[in-house]
Image (cartoon, rainbow, N blue to C red; front, top):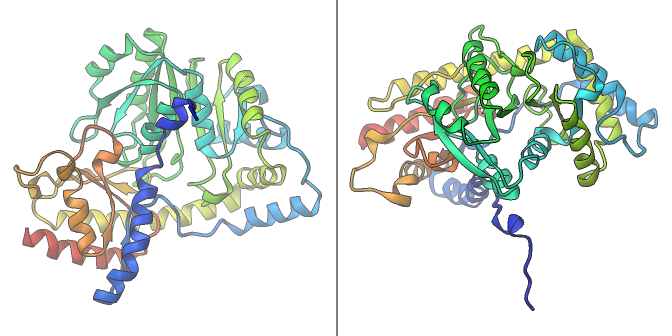
Amino acid sequence: MNENFNKSLENIRMSPIVTISEEIRKQAPVFKEKTGQDFILFQRGEIDFPTPEYIRNAAKKALDDGFTKYPKSGGEAVLKDAILGKLERFNKATGLTRENIVTTYGGQEALELSFKLFEGKKGAGFAPTWSVILENFIPYSDIDFTEVPLNKDFSINFDAIEKVAKDISFFYLNTPQNPTGKLFTKEEVIQLVEICRKNDVFLISDEAYEKVTFGGKEHFSPTSLEYDNIISTFTFSKSYSMTGWRLGYLVTRNERIPKLLTMGNYTQTAGVTTFMQYAGKEALDNIEAEEKAVSTMVEEFEKRRNLLYKGFQSIDGIELTKPDGAFYLFPNFSNFIPNSVTGSERNTYIYKKLLDIGVAAVYGSCFGHHFVDNVRFSFSTTPIPVIEDGIERMQKLFNSL
């Protein structure tokens, strides 16, 4: 039988982070039996905090109140109103209405719909780039995507953006960024938006980690700017430890886009489960409970960041930049890779060395064609004692290389 299926579906791949996690699942029992030690899991962007009780209770109440019927595609008014309040309060984004918002199954659907707007066109974004962008959204929408590498310290090369902006339909921004933890400054975001405006380029802004920032630094949302061709995507997953709830939304001042993406939302999923939208409303509207829950998580993440960063600093030869957001470090291990090691073997060289000592992380080539000597470490599920154990193992490993 000649099965000529859709190439877009045949070209997408499972995120390598998921593949790595499945590999660790197999190796962990063997490692435990051999060494008596547990694997240390730095590879996933999961969160080890439970969803805050006030949000769980709101979901239970919504169920008891009978909010179990078909949802309205694009989102219920109660959640959209809560989002508008949050946008004005936290993101300093004013002049928006319900018609500017589409609620989605997680930030991932918001991004997928946004990329689908530009199917078959050219786009660009910073390298390194979140693996799902590369492995899923780009092939699914048949997009010709250019990776614009950040500088070694993860600052922006604006000359490179100026060159690529002449030829693209959209630019993808993730701030704070996965995998680097880079929090782009207000000045950087404004300059990027001005380049987009000058070249009539849309900006897709992925703001999944907007509330996970450290050292008093604040996230700046481009959706606060008066440029219609910005699509900002958000999720409840990271800020509220709601990863499994799959609740997110997108916002844009462009009047046409929400109408198109609401139809896309209806076609794909027919709308977000109603009782979850009431939980989302409570997550945003109960400001006192929100501040307590979010600050508790972020304070712990900052302690973990500081410890892991200090641990890497203690190892001569590792190069890294201290992240101001998200929950990742992305150190460079070039000094530990022999010059004779090249190609795919080089990509996984450090990753495999870490596996040998029971440390799981994600190798840099999962995030594009640049920064292949870097490795991403997530501290979102690793308590302080686990990080201390990981540092001790890595100190022994790299001091011996």
